Amino acid sequence: MNVVYAMDEATLFDSFFNYLRDIEVFPLLDPLDPKKQRRKNVPFSQILLVFLMKVVGSIKKMDQMTDLLLTDELLMSMCGFNAYQVKNGSCKRGEKLRKTYLPEFRGALCVDTVANHIVTVSPRKIENFFNRCIQRLAKQGIFPKSIKAACDCTLYEIALCMKPPPSSKVVGVSPINAK
Image 1 (tube, rainbow, N blue to C red):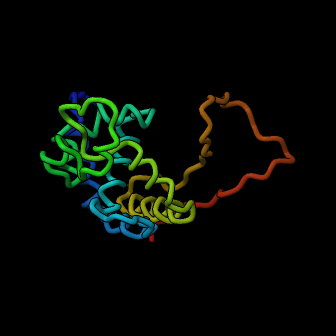
Image 2 (image 1 turned 60 degrees about the horizontal axis):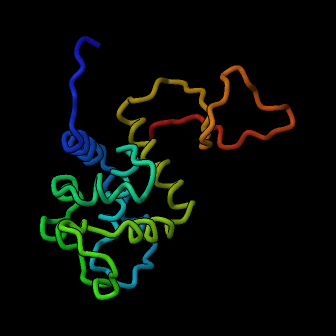
């Protein structure tokens, strides 16, 4: 690599979302909707994009989203929110119950709203979404011909020299082929 350029969050997500559009990932977001929303003032796909920004932006805790993401007009506009929604919220629900002062910028969504909606997506739908994303990436030639990998979602690093005991079962090992 000859040159390294710094990217701010807006440039990163703009480029990332454009790439997702190019490889046709956005149509895959609609099947993730569990159709469990009682009030549909915010489409589920917008909530998914906000959560995707949280993950890609390495925001570790949901509570940090308000300051780092939900009150940023530019980032929220990429998810389909407008400046009024970022400043005043997407609805007035719960304002009368508030016991603390009303902040200058409420954020486009409440952190609890994002969390409560994301957990309703079934693991099977998430698996299908990621498998289709991987297929699209494979069509782009992102992966080498052969990959040997292991997925580990724990928070602890494991030494590379460690191998699973012979009695353990390794699941989900399959070649990735572009379709």
